[in-house]
Length: 48
Image (cartoon, rainbow, N blue to C red):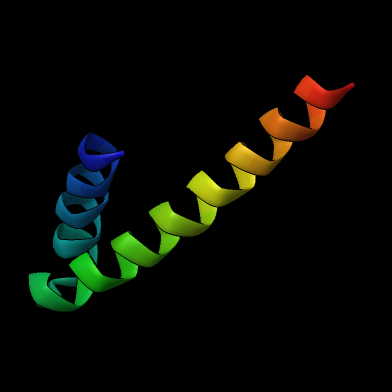
């Protein structure tokens, strides 16, 4: 998850010329939501 976070920070920082501190918070939230969604999906498939 952390390489994806770093890539997102680099991309959005260059695109928006934004402050990196704000992007890190957004990236952590996005990665947490995506991780929870993938965990739920895998768990659901595992139960059958």
